[in-house]
Amino acid sequence: MVRAKYQDVLDLGESLNIQNGNVTEDNGVLKVEGTAATQYEKNLIWDKIKEAGGDNPADIIANIKVADETIYARHTVASGDTLGKIAKHYYSDAMKYKKIFAANSDILKSPDVIHPKQELIIPNL
Image (cartoon, rainbow, N blue to C red):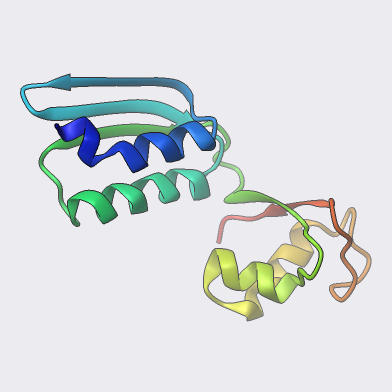
């Protein structure tokens, strides 16, 4: 029953390709383990847990590690993206585009020019 309550969390973990995933259920408590690629992906999992179980759920224990703690996320540029739009998505602040530009100065020559399919590093703040 608790597995059904958190099925969206398990589905998200699968879609994010969480590594070393393990899910067990013991006395009505779901135990979830795995390794997310980045902190951003770990945060997505926790947001989904809170969505299903509230801010402090007692029926799930999640031990999610992060494979690469040196960055916050990786972002593949899509048509219509701007650094401001990307910064707004990850940081809720479009003005933090400068941080993204600085972290990608090896591939970006201007903050006004990005191209679809470029993979950008979204730095930790």
